[in-house]
Image (tube, rainbow, N blue to C red):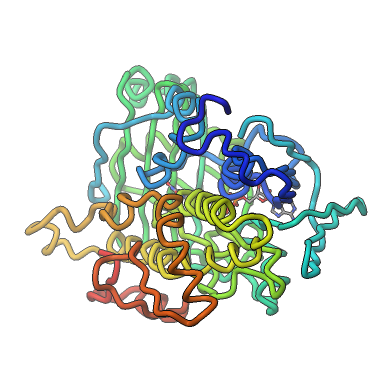
Length: 426
Ligand SMILES: Cc1cc2nc3c(=O)[nH]c(=O)nc-3n(C[C@H](O)[C@H](O)[C@H](O)COP(=O)(O)OP(=O)(O)OC[C@H]3O[C@@H](n4cnc5c(N)ncnc54)[C@H](O)[C@@H]3O)c2cc1C
């Protein structure tokens, strides 16, 4: 980490002991951000290893400007990353951090000075703070919020696959995708469905997704094996490029993944201020927001900057400041996932013919133009004055002039199937 610029070697957090639950985007980003500032970090991850943790993910400048400060991390990632030059939407035709694997956290408790996690094998770990980055199925969330809420159906599931170019080369109609040096990002949209193909020439891998209505009332399982024939049936009669690629998806590379989310909650920090929810554990995002992982990284940068500014002695205050700085922004980015899905699934083709831009993934400056760590450092004193003395505080990491409104999943789902303009993020 010595070559890291901006945050390297400050050692301002030496002596701070942090436990992190989960080695996803939120957990690993928190580990890096805190460790480079000198904190002693341990990550507890229930998976047995890091070999397969998903497929592809888009990262905007709001995340990469944070990762840029992590030494060689971004250059190394870019070597394997696909960077498609355009995206087509058509109609239907961290270093040195200790990670303990196989460690399922079953309990989190706190005192005024510390927090302790217990794993399924009975081990306990105590730190000054616990960062609970345990994803949409978070168990820590109930401890922090005080209410046991379960992830809710978003009404949709997605066939997800991640497979080798070798499969595309077996079909003369798809071979050209594997032979091309250019990364592809193509999407097809229709009523209540959309499909995406991406290719990554650097890694010689492809992905194919079909997002569809979740009709099967399966339980919370997020990882059901998928049947390529069922996936194909979803898009029968669509563009042959899409259907031919689906025919090549190897069965053992396909899952039917239930898209779940949870209502925004305002409380992300436990009563004594020693446990903080991060990433999807605090604010699950639908895939169509395109920024859930990036928001988890922004959370991590925010916590590290505030802990650095306020110091170990004010760790609880730093975590409360984090919650205040992030809530309104992530409530909007969570909502963005529903709104983009609505635009694609209830497409107003007349509006599109006048302005094709309406189909675009929103990439507003308020989302992509802010370095969350710098924002936290800049606004630290104001947010502390707000928390300690009630001084007014207005977020500036949301659209200019935007007045925050709380919303619920039920309210969003009430728009399902209807055309109309209720958008706040587009
Ligand atoms: C299909 C799809 C496409 C997406 N595309 C994008 C995109 O393009 N761009 C983007 O920014 N976001 C995207 N997202 C969202 C993004 O994947 C999530 O927002 C992000 O993964 C959240 O990160 P996290 O660290 O909070 O949680 P996760 O990535 O879910 O990580 C949680 C970790 O905690 C571990 N864990 C859980 N419980 C325990 C426990 N009890 N003990 C120990 N460990 C535990 C899990 O094994 C896991 O490793 C997409 C999501 C989906 C489903």
